[in-house]
Length: 144
Image (cartoon, rainbow, N blue to C red; front, side, top):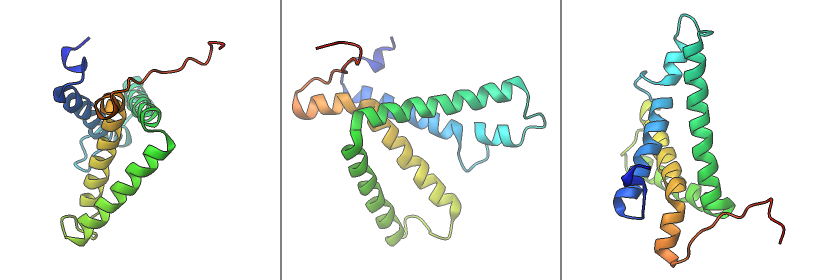
């Protein structure tokens, strides 16, 4: 395993946030250089490479969403979305992001989505640091 993904140092958290950001921005970004744009603008959308690229992008996003959902749960996800809504409102109010610019709103949404997925990837580490409790996953196939 990659050394930067082991343990619970700040480097691990940053690495996981970067992994989430790479997945998100490779899947879609407003610059037009993403898997989404490659698939949509391809002359042969039935090409095996195009289909494989789209499937890999979808699976990577779904895997990160599942990790985030498991790490945060319903309440944690709700809290994060409320916090992000407040950040969006603040960004619009202060003029950091223009409501008239779809591209700037897309960038903000993608950044927040990346942070959400990064928090999901790092959820157990953050929880262990904050509470001292270790998170374990319950297996559904074990009878108690």
